[in-house]
Length: 170
Image 1 (spheres, rainbow, N blue to C red):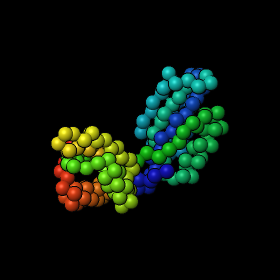
Image 2: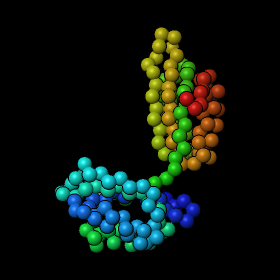
Image 3: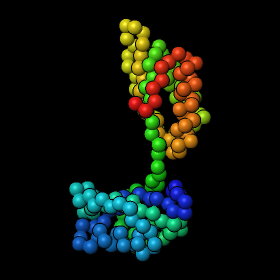
Image 4: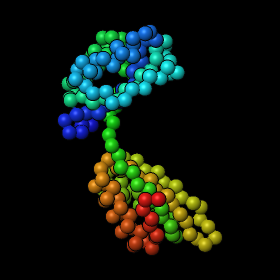
């Protein structure tokens, strides 16, 4: 789990029996253990083995508190289908215009990934036109603004060296 300050933000997908009071019964332990509920989605259309899906995002103080919550859910016959961290990401899109091929873009992203903690990337580029120019769209997600700043500096430097036009924040 990822901690922000003293709190951990957690997302859980739970399945409860399709009976009155089960939604409240699944959320109440979070409050009783001093957790803070941030969001709840009661998905009545997602039914598995006569159980309804509840997706809840909440804050807890520690892993110990989270383990106690999981024990309470299990004792109440609540199925924990998925439990994961929620964390903030920073996204930026870039457009590269020039004479390059797909291999160059892959190498560029591989080099960036070796230097910067990239959470996710999406790369798309056009086919080579008659004028031998090409356009690439890069979408990058990082977990910190510092990593995003490093990506900006990296792309700026590499594009200048390669004679590629670089547009940030498309």
